Amino acid sequence: MHTDTAPLTARRYGPLKGRLRVPGDKSISHRALILGALAVGETRILGLLEGEDVLNTGKAVRALGARVERYGAGEWRVHGVGVGGFAEPAVALDFGNAGTGCRLMLGAVAGCPIAATFDGDASLRRRPMRRVLEPLERIGAHTLTSSEGRLPLRLAGARDPIPIVFELPVPSAQLKSAVLLAGLAAPGETIVIEAEATRDHTEKMLVHFGAGVRVEPHGALGRRITLAGQPELTPQPIVVPADPSSAAFPLVAAVITPGSDVILDGVMLNPLRAGLVATLVEMGASIERVATRNEGGEEVADLRVRAGALRGVEVPASRAPAMIDEYPALAVAAAFAEGTTVMRGLKELRVKESDRLASTADLLRVNGVVVEIDGDNLIVEGRGRAAGGGLVATHMDHRIAMSALVMGLASEKPVKIDDGSFIATSFPGFVELMRSLGANLS
Ligand code: S3P
Image (cartoon, rainbow, N blue to C red):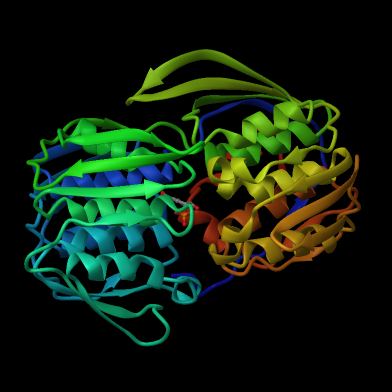
């Protein structure tokens, strides 16, 4: 995969109009396959994201002994093997571009008495794994890595997993989830403490499958999560809501493209994922929540988005966990605002699919926007417009690719990206869906 690069160009054309539903949430899709594989019996999933990242997680759980079958678009069934029941895989587990799939599966395998090789593409091979391996070793797993805790690595799961108390050193839902998934196989209570609350899909889905999970407040912003070990996970139907991180692209495109009026159907608005919508509203965007409802245990709403003037704002560091994947899209919106937008506390952006702090700044800069990185903060000087005309280096990063194309829809000159092939990791059909709104992408 990804042997061919796919350059794409976005041009200003007319307003964006119409209604669409973005694909299923990536975080929930990974977890549905993994918990389905750890439950005993058949888990039915509707609306699974069929992006490459999630498909790689499906292949991994299959290699570990679960049966994974596709019945139709987004409709999947997983026959799980039970907590601790994974079989030793005959092949290396290849997670492609997906940090989430890899880190969550490291946790899931760490509680099983088997060994497995974990690998990924060049982007994933550069990303830090030590943060996950350290607690997994405390639980009793052994790991062998080639260089400084990066992929490829070999993990031997614990024969007798030990429950641990783990304080997250960084606000990372992947890390929290890896420890909880490993803790499933340990007797007693596994406790994860986070100073700032991060997305809670693992905790919620564990409860949905019948595990004993207690969530208590910790400090001003944090949580303490206690998992009772060795539960019998009972399969439950899962309905995957539309991914707010994918909705971010048509959302920002509609806000910055004059005359636009778009409805995004069924977008998940879990409070730990909804930071972008809150920030855009503070900037003056017209985003109306229509038909707020519950889907698959999550709050969802149709979002009616209309173009309009934006003003620069200060985005506090405390909001970063609730919109960590949305900063590239927000930075594009900030360029089209009037005034300065300061986004604080973006350290974790440096270890995403690319150094996303640098690649976001570069994407704006090559398109004539004044932008500065100050420590862990990103500062964008909004002028209400952008020159465009740049060729954006996407660095194997789907969100940089889509953000650059969104920018091109409202810039004076076209914006080109070097490679759109990674868009399929999280948002298959992006180009077609954006074209259905009237976007000029070629
Ligand atoms: C994710 C957590 C976040 C996010 C990623 C998905 C998850 O990563 O960036 O896209 O599903 O748990 P970190 O945990 O590294 O912040």
